[in-house]
Amino acid sequence: QVQLVESGGGLVQPGGSLRLSCVASEDSFNPYYWAWYRQVPGKEREQVARVTTVGYFEYLDSVQGRFTISRNVGKTFLQMEGLQFEDTAVYYCNAVTVSGTTATDYWGQGTQVTVSA
Image 1: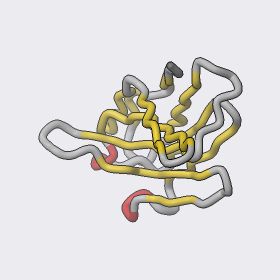
Image 2: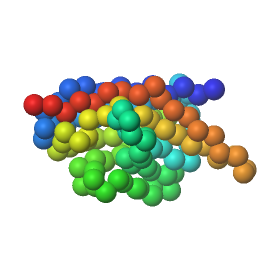
Image 3: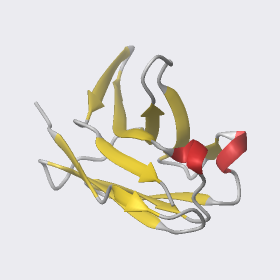
Image 4: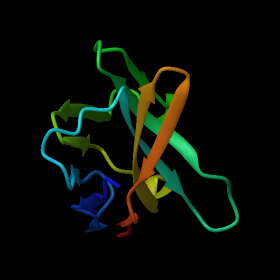
């Protein structure tokens, strides 16, 4: 079972930047897509960004133009610029592999991002 490990979260002032990383336990792990989600207490987890193997990118409207997802074999990154109070959340890395008709989800443990003055 592939494990995903996130890093890069922390405390940042409004307008600041952070870069989240997610590394798979297998160097050759190359899922159909990588995604980043976030969740705040009392709310559902929401997808922030996604990138597929064919280079299709998708962003949550509120982060469009500020966040950039990228991928490499075995890892994904989320570059976050212009952070706002509303971006405070636990961020989770997600990967989905597809084999035939079976899709498998992988999740990281989450990393806290706090935007505060």
